[in-house]
Length: 122
Image (cartoon, rainbow, N blue to C red; front, side, top):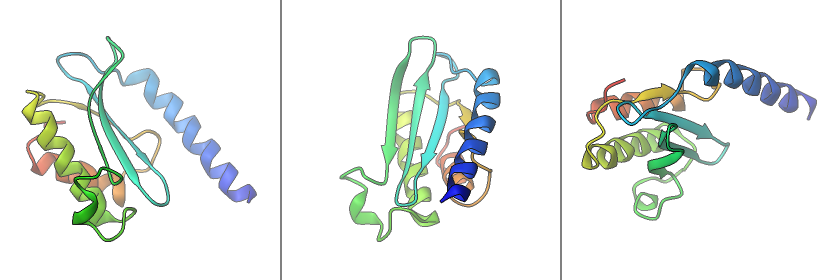
């Protein structure tokens, strides 16, 4: 159990360092990602106003039928594509990517690549 606590503390420490440098604005909002063992969540935030512009997750009702497992790379790709589609519908084409302290591989990378393929620029 202590190993899990240490990993979470390390991620939070990395997150604090990144959050100091990454800010979302109206012109270029912040795309942030959170992952749990079972699900992955992504949202686009305007930090100047403190508003979430759009979001997507594996728990969304419209996406739950497309995936068998909410925690895998396939699910992350579906969430990334869905988030990019809803962002482009709201005329958001450029974002800043905030990996939230997670290493850029696996599900985080799959979500980012799917969002790029769907048309988001970051």
